[in-house]
Length: 180
Image (cartoon, rainbow, N blue to C red; front, side, top):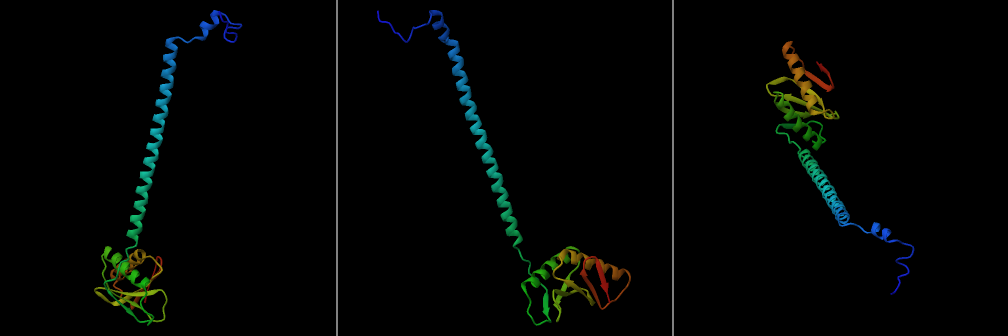
């Protein structure tokens, strides 16, 4: 008989039996390994799903911003006459301002008849409303058209309520209307 010197040295038979795994322990170990693999796969699927959802959300947000930018590129063109008394030419800023003002005035029930760029004035546009030829309204092109339209509406209402007939109305300063 050959002796395996490394295998049995200092060991008893009882120690060998304790070291051996039972069949049920091996099955339990396999189940644990399989469960860990399933958890890893499910975790990977969850992470990939989250990444996909975030990517889709970012893409849709980006497309939404792109549509807003394209929509904001719309420049309203005026349909009324713009008379240039200054001789400097009508700039695109003036055209855009008058075009947007025309839209804002129509939204509140007023109709623009014509606009005049006065001589010797910077950033000013004088407007005439349809059905009202007795006075004109001075506006500042650096103010928002919606605010200017609202101030114009208030002044027109005030003048008609008090039966006033001025030469012009000045609404270039926010919240301050002046007439003469």
